[in-house]
Amino acid sequence: MDVNGVGWIAAIIIGGFAGWLAEQFMKSEMGVFMNIILGIVGAIVLNAILAFAGMGFAGWLAYLIIGFIGACILIAVGRAARL
Image (tube, rainbow, N blue to C red):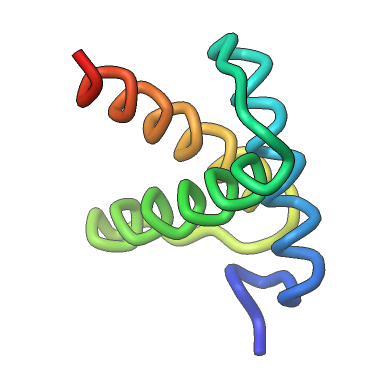
């Protein structure tokens, strides 16, 4: 089973790295587990939005970039919901 062209283990590793990058970029304080969740969920959500728009991407680099952007969006939404 593949997730966006990468395996499940690679999705967890890349998702964690994407979440960590988003945490550093957005200057938020979250743990390792939350970084992994944000990276994976961000990649899934943004990939679904892009697929709905007719764009599809595959591979670990695309998963990293999409995960990073998706995690940044989720952090921003989370901050806006707290206010």
